[in-house]
Image (cartoon, rainbow over all chains, first blue to last red; front, side):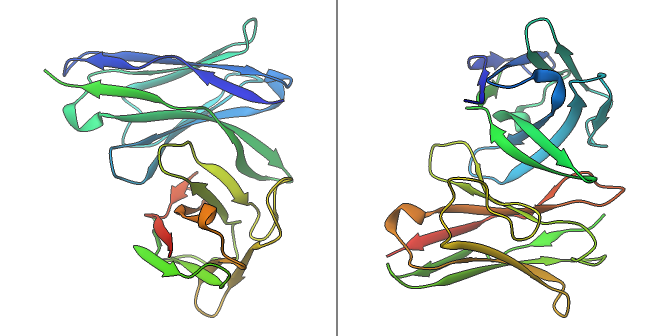
Length: 121
Length: 111
């Protein structure tokens, strides 16, 4: 069965960087893209960006594009999201999610369990 | 950029039917598919509707999706409500300039 297993919780100071991993299993990794979505405590979902596991092409949310980098390692079926210059209001649960695309449209069909990133001095 | 507006909360009794709306602020709701995600407390989201009205395998047919061009909105309808349906529901769509836009979420209470 398809699984996305994320790395554990992180505590970071403002201005630091965090790198969250997402290990995929149960499918051919390079066939699907991975999106990253975050959710601040008590808030809604916010799309951060997407990476093609096939060719590494990325598309980032405009507000984050200067501070975020998404990568994949096809040898280990892992996706990574690095966010730099963290701010305290970026305390959130960060999710990876598999994108299922066909006929020009895409949707998320599987989600990781989430990684809590706490930004605090 | 467009926005997707959902009611903050809805409530209904077990066995009844509830509809959650999702209104697109600009651009046609029919131009790009709408997805719906369910998020139970303390859990990751799951997909209940994709491409306006398609159900992933394993999602009961009590869940249905539709779009209405006249109101420029999408709707998620849940019939035969069960207590396990109590969750937050998010709509999501996109356009060429905005790859993913989520609605603010609707808290469904089944009382």
